[in-house]
Structures are given as C-alpha cells and as structure tokens.
Length: 566
Image (cartoon, rainbow, N blue to C red; front, side, top):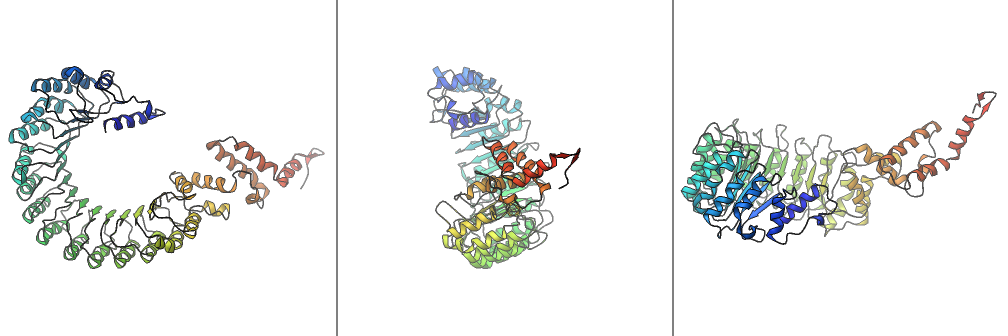
C-alpha cells in the first residue's frame, strides 16, 4: 500500500510515467525521501512489516525529526512495533509531534506500551489542525490506555473521526471504552465506529448516554458486525429521539435483534424527531414480518435519503411489495436504495418498477447480485421508469442478467432511453455476458442514430455505462462522460457523417445560405479536436459542393459595378 500511494501521488503531480518514482529497495530510500521532504511521500508505516519502515541504523530520533518537518505526509501508521524500546518510541514521537500535515493516524495491532504511545503523541493531537481521523484495530484496551487515548483525542482542535475495529474484551470493555472516550462533555467526534467489537447491551447503553448528552457533534455512528441485543437497540432508539445531531446509523450484520428490538427503532423512524439521513440494515436477517413493519414506519419518514437493505434473502415478494409501495409516496425522500444480494422474484422486481415510475426522488437503485434470475419481463417493466419525465434515476444495477433476457428486453429498454437525460449508468452487462447482434444494434441506435444529422443530434448523450464496453458502443459511451452535451452531439455527428473521406451527402439538400454556418460549425469542432486531417476535410467539403462554389463565384462577379442577379 505504501508504494501504491506514492505512485498515485506521482500521477497526481503530472509525472508522465509512474515508473519514474524510484522503487523502494531499502530504508535508505525512504529516509532520503523524508529528509528531502519529497512530495511523493504521502503515507508512511512504522514497524517490522512488509510495508513497514524501520529507520536506518535504528536512528528513531532522526526519523521522527524528518517526519516532523515533512509537509506532504498525510497518513501515518504504527504496525508491529514490538522491537522498539520505550526510549526510542519517545524520541520518535517527539519529532512526529511537530508535523502539521498528517490527516489520518492508524494503530494496527502494534504495541501501545500500556498507552504511552498515546501519551507521547498528545502534543501532536493538540497542535495538528489537519488531523481528522484515528483508527485502532485489534486491541483489548486497558483502562489506562483508554484514558490516555481519550486525553490525547480531547486535546485536538478539530472534530475527529475515530474507528475502533475488532476490539477485544467483549461488551463490558466496549462500554468502558465508550464511557472513557466521552467522559468530557466537550469531546467532539463527528464519526464513531465500533465494528466487530462484540457490543451487546452495555455498550449500547453507554452510547445511548452519549447520544442524549448535549452538546454533541456526533453525526455518524457505525455499529456493524456486533451482537446488539433487543435491550441495546431499544436504548439506542430512545436516545435517538433526544438527539439533534446523528445523521447516519450503520447496524449491518447485527442478527441478534428480534422483531421486538426492531419495532423500537421503527417507531423512532416514523417520529417527527427523526433526523437520520442514512440507515444501513444489510445482513440483519430481516423477514416478511419485519419488512412490513419497517414499511409502515418508512411511509411516515421524511428524512431518510439512503437506505441499505442488501443481503436479506429471507424477505419474500410479500415484504418487498410493502417496501416498494412506499416509493410511490410523494413525501418519500429516498435517493439511494440498495437491495443487492436479495431474493427478489419477478413479481417483486415488477413491483419496484411500478413504484419507481411514479417516484421523483430516487437517484440510485441497486438489485445486482440477486439470488433469483432477472427475467426479460422484469427488465421490460423498467421501460416506463426510463421513459418517465419525472424520473431522476441516475444509476441502476441489474447484473448479472442472463443473455437471453438482455436480448429479449434490449429493444424496449433502448426505446425508453431515447429521451432520457438523467440515467448515466444502466448496468445490465458484465464481462461474461455478450449481447446478440440485435441487442447491440438497439443500444447502438439509441446512443448514436446514424440515419441523419438531426437524428444523431437527438440521440442519447447521457448514458455512460452498460456494465462493460462492447464494440463500438464503448466510444459513444465514453463520449457521453463529457458534461457539455452539445459538444458530445457535435463529436458524434462529425464521427459519423464527416469522418474519413468527407461525405457531403448529409448537407447536399441544404439551402445555400446555410453552408457558411455548416462550415463554421465544422471549424469549431476542429478547433477543439485538431488533427492532421482537419483542414483537409474542410477543404474537401468545400470543393465537393460545386453549387456552393458556383454560388460564391457568381456573387463575386461584377457586371457594370453591380453583382449579377441570380
């Protein structure tokens, strides 16, 4: 990862070839980059690891001094520091504390020296205004270490994102950690992540106390992959009703919650106090009963914009019908709905299509990875959605879709896209799916209708991606990435009607007075896309229009000081 980030930085500094960045062969290379304040060095890992850096001659004080002076370094990671003495750690941190460019610090299973690592870094947290996130992974934080971490974080002048991943010690230790991190009422974190940390009820009760505390700037809470109990989710739901800050809640893969606990959360969602804008309930073992109950609360919610219900295969068409009906509610604010990895049958797919045809808020709808085959009938049901003038869908995923379903539905889908100026990503293809010639022609026709200049100009210039690039479709889809749609139309017209050996047929029936405008239009295109053949094609166009040349000669002929009348 270290070398990859360096190469990415090199690319961003407009180096012609990322291979111009020297290969990391020894600690001397990294030391040189640190010493020279090399702008390509944006991430650094200390420790005895594959990507780790150990100072040459074990000079940790000098390495720390170099880091302190570096102005481009953005990420710092401590990993596998077992062989560092406490004194060398102190000297290293002494230099690091002078750095004011680092934005993210990670502690990935390294020796925390009983919390002294946090203690040594307190001046760094205090004096670095750019620091915005801290990650700890794989720890059983002792009370002293937690106290020192909390002390360090509380000295930071900015709101911090803190991610505590795979903490050991169970629910009790998680509760103690949360209480310690928020022991000061002025503590300000805008993101708090406690993933895979065995949080049950005690941890949730402590979090509930945090959410009820005012003031608090906590806007995002991630409790994914825990074993939250009904008692825990009830406590959180009650606290959320008194919280004015939280906007995102992630409860992914918490399968221990029953309908009792979910109803408490659903009650909060339909209350006028709900301010949540994003909710993740993926992999939580929802069934039809829970889905129907959730749909009732969702129909009264006016704040949610992003909803993740992916990987809940127990929900049948009965539950999905209840949820899809919510989308027809004019007060529905949902913009992103993620249903990937579920078991939507043809009926459920068609129910969502019907609802989306009457929805104006949805921008992203995902049913990729569906455990049941998407049929051509299901695909065709979305044609009215794409043809609807009120639809604001920008991205939709069906993949993988059987080849025969794509071939059968291609004409209906392409016809509905002719006037669509919102949909950018219609992902129905993948690398293993090759559409038939008829399907290919249908999509090609909508992207670039070659029948006339006017038809090409009125083609779809918005659709960017179908899942993979297929033949010449790739060039048209690539052109559509340009946000200047008039320029896209111009390029397609020139590519189809005026490329190679100049074809004058498209302009042969125009009125004479329009020819100068045609020439100006072509010249404008070539001024943006200058090639060796540009002026040659302009010359060919003029010389192959005899009537146009005759007209000019006639107009330039003077008889008795006057132009001839034509």
